[in-house]
Length: 488
Image 1: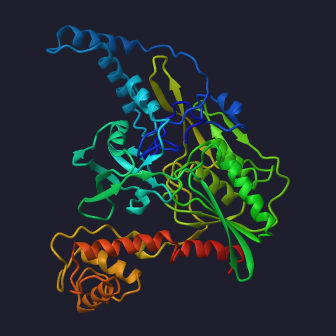
Image 2 (image 1 turned 120 degrees about the horizontal axis):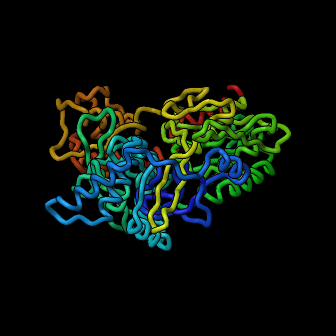
Image 3 (image 1 turned 120 degrees about the vertical axis):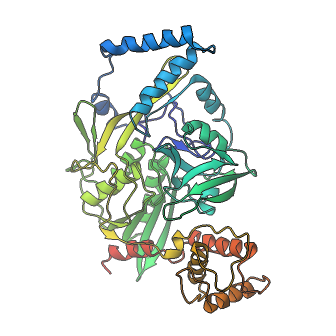
């Protein structure tokens, strides 16, 4: 989460909206008249947590000048001054081993700025650089990335056959982004899967809405559900408006869903928390490099008169975690699985020549002073989704048939079971029961009935599973979040 966004390196898989890790899959920058992405209420206090001044240069700094002169004078090829200077900056930032601190030269900034006027097109996922690999933080709701089944922590090894391992994040992002209707092939490595696999994604318009709401009836009780997909400039306002409409309908409980929400603007989540966290406790604390802390409070006299629960998962990061841990420490239930674990705040500093350094300036802490960085927020009620939510894409060149074994067969079996068919077993052995389940699926979907899983059958099974997940079927986490409101 970057404190208020001037040239903040947030890249949307097409257009940049707001993210915490510093990049979405696509490429558009967020810009404003300010150079920090901070909250209105605590911006002044947070600025006091650090001092912007020149540090005394260390004695060894002359070594940099010596190295520069040595290279310029003796290197076998001609080297431009700019290459050496920017290489030194990149080297310093790399030595921090902080995936959220980065450098963009003037040319890269200019290319990103040129995309601001373009439409929101791309694949729709936020990425970060982890151990030299472009890593998915979370796909955006209703995006091509989500439809293709990309997940948090998926690592992208290559784009259209070109390796991006070790590549600068922004360079990799530029390869991934593209115009609506064009295809990109990503080679993906996923935890628990022995071999990388390819995912072909057709770029499209990326949804710009960040708040969705509806009313569900649970045992006769009208319950509001608000989903927040990212925290952008208008998110707090939209949330408050939709919450007011739900309250006009006399809701008796509320679920706030931030699953798969990669974060965004600090002031957006602050604006939301002011609706729920009473003034007798802070809703967030910010700690500067000097160890000083500032606490932010609301003007709220008391809690809402109805119960509230919050939904999180491994794709909930940064601002989503600020919301979740604040609600948890205020006594509300948090349902789902442990969140991503990002507890730092970045600020983008223009260097005067069009280039920018984005540097980690702050830690954010929970109301009780806990730092969740690399730990995540643990739910009060842990609930896993059904197994078929976590199946992997299956590439079939030679058909899978009776007596075959392996991970591909196992994934097909789990998906068939999730679709209501009966494969008999889900351990990766292609049994007679599995063959019958395949035949039944083929019959129901007007495919040639062979009992063999060819490329067409595998693709349709996967499509049906994705459609089922996106439709919210068997969403046991949501079901539990609704039920805990009334302690069922």
